[in-house]
Length: 246
Image 1 (tube, helix red, strand yellow):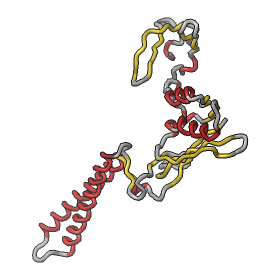
Image 2 (image 1 turned 180 degrees about the vertical axis):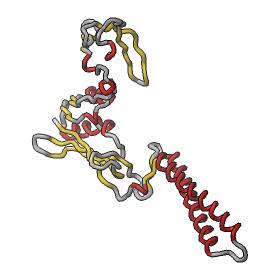
Image 3 (image 1 turned 90 degrees about the vertical axis):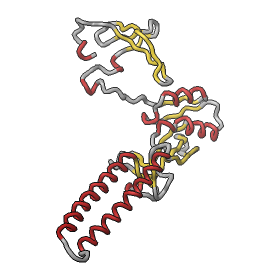
Image 4 (image 1 turned 60 degrees about the vertical axis):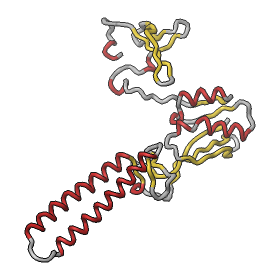
């Protein structure tokens, strides 16, 4: 058995040197607004002055040149973003990425350090440093690395709900790894006053669901979304007192 978890390791970089498309658009907008403002001030100063170039006009011209240079730098960063697979660019540490953390609303620019620990002996049996932000893509590779290190044909891997991903769970089972990962509740139903999926009980012998009102929901149809088979169950219940919440 191993326990798997990830930690965010801060890189030698700052948020100001890390760019996403949204951040780049905001910064370009600020620079373009400043250029427009300085152009208006330069036109006003130029029309109100006569004779040799005044210090104010020189100052405005220098600021415009600086802003246009900055705009050119941002456009070059935009070209790098377009070529980046994950749509991020870090200037100081090219491999670092912006990642969310629970302690800082801005997150951290750095790396995702994965570790598998033997809970009995408290020994790290496998670890890896990646720049993939989410833990859900790390379950299989971290568990397999630990399995190879331990030399176990079958192994239990424990992780938190951040590692839950259907394809990863299935691949672990096929590799002889028993994943013990709680499934997160990603449905907004309960937040909007509806019944959550957990309130509907699946009855495998008939492949139906029992709703909170006790009615049986038949399988209506199935469809494929991406690589996943989605089955839809339902029944019209016009007189059900719980219908508005279903």
